Image (cartoon, rainbow, N blue to C red; front, side, top):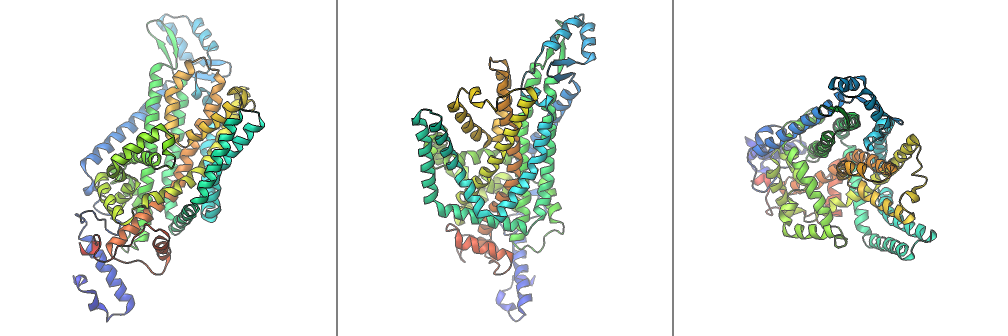
Length: 582
């Protein structure tokens, strides 16, 4: 009760006790706002209690839809597994005895069914993986180890890794141009690639300060994570869930081409029925949602733990990692269900609309117009809305309104700066994913006695076609979820076309690269999650008027944000909204 008195009345106490009293006063002032924060403000603390009561009805509805879709996904997968009555081999499809018995019971010809199965070939990509199960096993098993090494290198050699990833694109285009000139391809095309490489190098030179700044930001984010190693424990649980789900989804997809039905009207055998193909499309759509859900859950966990550390919160739970994970999976489930979808869409719109080369892409022009017209609405629905929810426990849309106002007052360019590191993390991950995809491509060739990788230029009609495929390859693995969904949707069309079945080897490589990208991005995004949390926590603490640590680990973060980021404006007394005075 005495904590509300003027701070000067406590100055006769020793310095240590005086500092503790000030922190108690700030904590009490913030607790008064537990059920109703000041308009457009976020308290400088992470709420761990009463989070269920702050969610709105829309969050619960979306959470219900998510779990219905998840149950349907599992149910369809189990149904396909129990109805998988065929064995795939290089000689054809071997049917189970139960299929022949069902044909005979219907009045059909057993010999005819046997001939059909012996003459059938693998209809699509899933058959290739069904015959070579070691490909998904190795991909899912090895990729997380590469991701751990990648994060360690990012922390240890942040400056070198940043510039290596940045220069990768320019060097890649330069190599394509040189290869084209040596192969005697139309010199105009090769010169264009060389010119593009030169433009990128000039662009990187004139923006070198931004790139160096991004390097320091990533280093700072890794430093914060090194002081909160339990973040990796909590997010590691979510990554195990991701790996388990990917393995289960892949298993279900492999079972799909093994599903065999007997037509009761004509007593014929139907391999890989059309309804099963529709099931795989729905399951892939749910794959996109579930992975986005796990990514947003990871962001909530990271934000709660890093935020608690940055705010120097004394009333933190004794088991912070477990409590954060529990809240993210329960009370935050509704906000995450809807936020994961909306933020994924918004992030793609902003990335396209704010690109330096948006004018070179027709879709980029459309999104730029959309972004300019609805700038306020779009910027309110970024990942920072999820971070705000992690702090307050409010519904997704309530959090988005608050975070937009806070960032507008404190971090005008905070979003853009936090996105600079995305390219660094993703570029390095894409290079690793492409290597894993090429390895899968090689395995598919070996398993089917093909030579598409060694004769790659012939498969794509020459070197120019191959270079175009490589560019498309990089574009596709930058959007792994969308690519996997499109591959699944187009599988039926590709299988029924006149294309050589060997085309599935490079497609399989792209698919494996996308799965690897999902895993590596999940791991690498922990660094970006920490960075986004630090950006917002700095803005929130600036407005709260509680001051910043002058010593200790948090002071390092404060020094960087105050001195290194020109857009970071510390709110002075009387400016904006001070939470402690609300």
